[in-house]
Amino acid sequence: MYIGVDCGTQSTKVVVLDVEQGLIRGEASRPHHLDEGENGRREQAPSEWLTALKGAFFEALERAGVDAGQVRGIGVSGQQHGMVALDAEGVPVYPAKLWCDTETSAHNSELVARLGGEAGCLDKLGLVLQTGYTASKVAWLRDHHPEAYQRIDSLLLPHDYLNFWLTGHRVTEAGDASGTGYFDTQRRRWRLDVFAEIAPELDAQRVLPRLLEAHEPAGVVQSAVAAELGLADDVVVSSGGGDNMLGAIGTGNITPGLITLSLGTSGTVCAYSPASVVCDNAMVANFCSSTGGWLPLICTMNVTSATTRVRELFGLDLEAFGDRVASAPVGAEGITVLPFFNGERVPMLPEASADFLGLTSLNTTQANLCRAVMEGATFGLRYGLELLGDLTAGASQIRLIGGGAKSAVWRQMVADITNTQVICPVITDAAALGAALQAAWCDQRETGVTLDALCERLVTLDAQSKADPDPARVAAYQTAYSRYCSALDQRHGHADSLNARGQ
Image (spheres, rainbow, N blue to C red):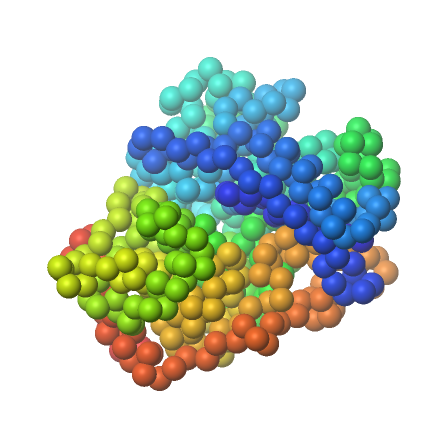
């Protein structure tokens, strides 16, 4: 048995993968509390992740009917970019600032300028710093909480922190490290001179975790934790990775030609590349994969987080919300939503707020507002998909994951808006499955088992989830998307160069 853990923004999920039988034997999750404040502050206590992991672990094993002694390996996926700053005792000096925290926007702009603008960032890092990345969080902590900053002994990411708790080792891998802002994604190494610009008082050689190759183990579960969880003494912990990287594994997106699109709290679109990609747009992140290759992607910050706000505003459960969306016409009778409740990364608008445009006394209905916010979140993902250019232009299928992928209405909407067939893996929480697959690969690699073979056998697609684009709706959505792009340009000055392609 192999355990896959996915520590996300809203919860930690655990799955129990039976590799021999080729199935998920059990799964469970536990929620997290998100601490939100003024100026875009979004933080969490890392101790909540540990509590959630342990609770979900025991429940998943119980549901699976499996004894912890049968577990051979654990893989951990984590929300990217979060700053987990630890003191010499391994205790956080400050709550984890998360990927969706935009309080550090000014620090990010200053760092980009000091690194030579977008061209300098691309040269040094292979990507352009974004507000969500870890770098500006460290710079912010230095300015606002110098006493905490001075106690930093290690700088980890969320998945690194869980690996540290499991193994006692402070390590990371190239996929998740790509999102720190002080890692060279082209050459797969820390960029110590960039780190010195961010945190000149800290010794990078001491505070940055040791880099692993994707197939290397982070270690074995340390004895105290093994005893607490009921594990054997030799349970391997794989290198793990960011949720986008492990989600790609969980959809089988480890060779060229596939698109993985996630409808989670945030949204991501990614495609595997065997080589580093030189991007001509600052919004495309040339991240490494957690399989030894690269995973260029775009990320939008408002997907289920946006639909949830409108759903809860009306007091609707998920089924009722879906019914409202389905009852409204394509284009929501002229309502356009720019759903930037959390600011936005693609396009780069960290300080933006949400807009509901085109409201009249006739079209302002609950159903139209529900549909418009879902359409707005999906238009943002199409905007990002087109930025990936040739990497995704020839793809015939989108593999859809995340909580939103469970909605048949949303699956059809993605197919119609992108004019591409959509299908879900049987396991839509793909990051946890990807983590378990990586753990199996790490444990069995010396016996000749490959990750390709594991994915081919264990990543199965749900034929009933397939959605093909409808020509009439595709045409209607082109009009609605043009309206979205025009609104984006008018409100924020983002010229509609994408829509000019006439796609």
